[in-house]
Figure 1: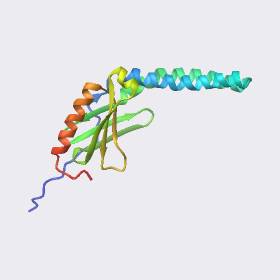
Figure 2: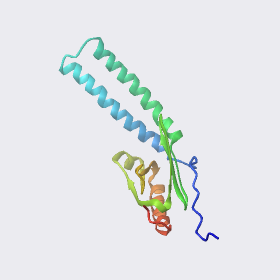
Figure 3: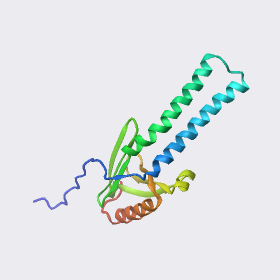
Figure 4: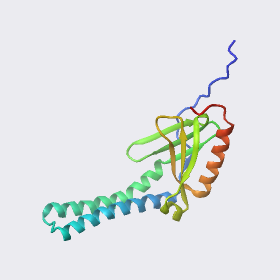
Length: 169
């Protein structure tokens, strides 16, 4: 008779929680800044290096059109895809834009739980929770979570990971 404890059976599934709606603004502002830097560099090149003609003009117009489309569409798309969930057994994360990245990590494999907040996230009241596991795939990141929710999540995951049996390796 086998007296060994049964292994936990975790299945990859869509997580239950969406990120904060404020993440849409965060992603849009980030994208807008990146595109403005590119458009600014193209405009500066036209003036300072006398970069004129059909190719530079085409590049500038394309950057403006693609930048506007990317800034308008990408944040909404990411908001629909990004999800997260924590249970006493596992952390579930789904993210991506063109490529969907869905991961599940058993709590027994959690090594550290951290929170990151850049200037835009602080201004919008958001945070990113980083769950480092004993995995070659790297940490799980839950980006765009309300700061209060992220703080609770870090506290709860830390407590659950401490209580979980396992060596996090």
